[in-house]
Length: 277
Figure 1: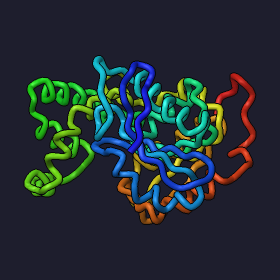
Figure 2: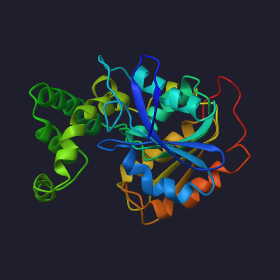
Figure 3: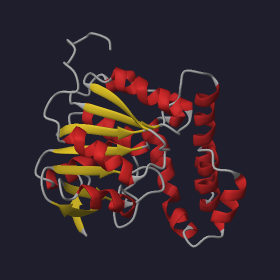
C-alpha cells in the first residue's frame, strides 16, 4: 500500500501493480481498492495499474465537509503520482466521478466507463433517485448504517430475500463501514439535485477519447443510458459485452479495456466547438 496527499490534506491509499502506461481504476458504491484487484491482475502485464481507496473507504482518510470537487482532487493526486497523466477506468458511480474529473481538465489521456447509472428521461426514475437521496441522508444521520446499505441494495434491484441473507453474512460489517460513502456516490450522481440526470453540459467538456461499455444482460435503461452517454461525448464510442451484467466479469472486461486503451487513434473525429452530438 502507498499513500498520496490530496489537495485538502486527505491521505489517499492506493496499490500499484504491473508495468507500462498508467491506468487508474475508480470504483463504484460499496467498493474499496480491493474490489479492483482481480481486474488489475489481468491488466498488469500491459499497464501500470493504480487501484485506490476513494475518500472515506478502506485506508484512505476523509475530511469533512464532503464535496464532489474534493474527490476530483483525489483522483488528480493519484494521476500526479502515476507520472502526471494516465488513462482512467471508472465503474458505475466511479464512471461519473471520472467524467467530472475529465470535464474539469484532469490529465486523463483516455477514459473508459462501465454503466454509469444515470436516469432516463421519464418521471419515475428521477423521482426515485431524489427519494433515495433524502432517505439515505436520514438513515445515515441516525447512525443506521445497516439500513442505509439495505436501502441502497433495494434501490439497485436486489431482492429482499437476498438482502436478508447478506445481512447475516460475514461481509456485512464491511458494507456497514462503507455506508457513509453511499452519500458521496449519491452526490457524484446528482441524485438529490438533478434526479441523476445525464449531465449533458458536463459531458460536452470531455475532450479525450472515451469508451462507454455496458452488459448485454443489464437492464434496458442502463444500456440505453450508456449508449446515450457515448453519443454525447465528443470522442465517444459504445460497446456491449454480451452476457454481462452490472457486476461485470473482469475476464470479459479486461480484453475490451486493453484494446481501447492501447488504440492510438481517436474514437471519432472531434466535433467543432459548439456543435451538438
